[in-house]
Length: 273
Image 1 (spheres, rainbow, N blue to C red):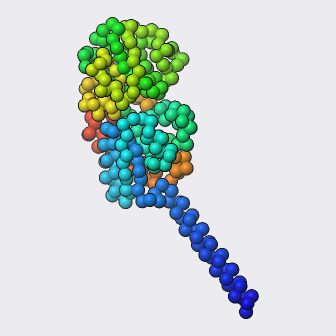
Image 2 (image 1 turned 60 degrees about the vertical axis):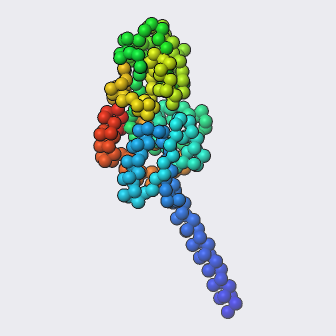
Image 3 (image 1 turned 45 degrees about the horizontal axis):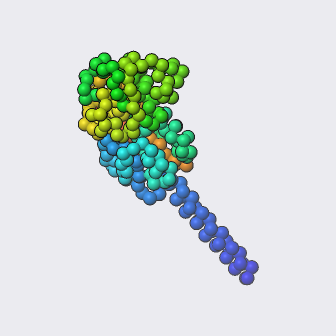
């Protein structure tokens, strides 16, 4: 009798432990969606507006999104790495790779989103050929966008770069400065606001739109539509394969969102799908 009772108690204890383990496993499998919402970081401007549309469509699928808006390129990755965000959507792969390595961030690329062609803007001239000798030209100070801007200046015929430096070009790699231009490196988010103090500047499209420019109309030179600088979403490595990420990717890359981008931004942004 006692032996039977002891066996029953042991069996019950094992069953309870197994049940607890099952519940824990079930919770872990939910990944990012344990708290019933996704916190997504974006930069102010077009990324924010596109995510608003995505949020509307996601709600129809039972997915709740909370948006955090940033005005710089560094903090969205830091916040994601530290767990304050579940996902961010704002950056190109070259920039992502550079900051991930520089800050040792455990993040991975998720899905492609849109391309923002970088443009050259000026309040004084209507074409790059009109820039005066010795003009002061602004460009982003972060390495990835700086190299991108220099390649844009080369495409515009302003300079010639060391052909071996490519995307990693710096102002030191300018081999020929056709107009004896002075290049000034500035924070990406501030360049549009400082354009009055410059003859021209390379400005990322999201900041140009935020400043009231229409890239396809106001830029005096703009990247071609086959630009390799596609933006993408990023997540922590541990969440790379979470089911909710694929669901979000499908919503973001839907025909509804594509139509919204084309109608809202008139070619200034290019869907990557």
